[in-house]
Image (tube, rainbow, N blue to C red):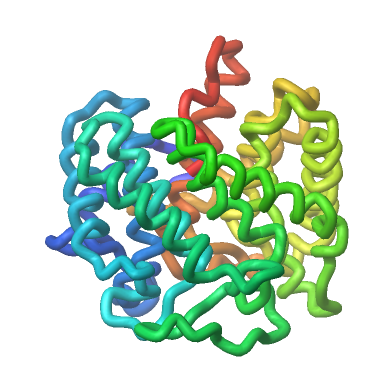
Length: 343
């Protein structure tokens, strides 16, 4: 561990570590203990597209834009009725589809390539068509019939407020295209989530699983950021932010996820227009988050007790660099510390 955060090392890790293959697909994570990558994940590839464009926005280095285009090309070439969990998987996740769409939109915002927006629009409408149960949205469907997979007692196998981060893709597409049906669908999803979000935590008596749920709960925060001019959304944001901070403090001596540290820090800054930032808490969270960066530049998944979990994670790295960069800008008094939406 280097002990000092470096955006350049993190960017180098995305580009040259081998976490992304030559076709543009990105592995779920890298097992540092065995020096092996997990299989390519379409969701993680979507996150990486957004991360690469964030790196481009900060550094202005064309290599990140070029790699972002490659990543978007990989996503465009996937089957998309709806997008599969892995390139050849028989399952599709509602959540993953939204992350893929948002990755395509992040690249489109710079390249203005029509194909990216066309696919993002069609896929957004497909999510609504293919996953809607009549009362909520199925987390997983089996392909090609799009049969809902049986729900189980774990957050990723149940519907909930965490899914609203993927519904955010509909808002982002609507902001570009003017499609009021997609905007309304996002607002309806938020309305439903506002009725249930207080019940998401703790969700289990197993403290490590509560930490996992903090990661998911933070997705709800990220989905609310366009609506922080609404009193009900500010109330929900404040409640969720405080709940994540409290549980993270309580559980992190036993088990801490780096992405939760990043999501909490990032949420503080993105919510600053409505909720004053606790500067001391944010500075502490930034310092703790930086400790997870490995010498290679990627961020480790987490820590159990005093031992780091030896998995280098693209999502942890994406969230961490955005959190630390917006914190830097905010602390320095930048006029627009959050120029891009949460990855």
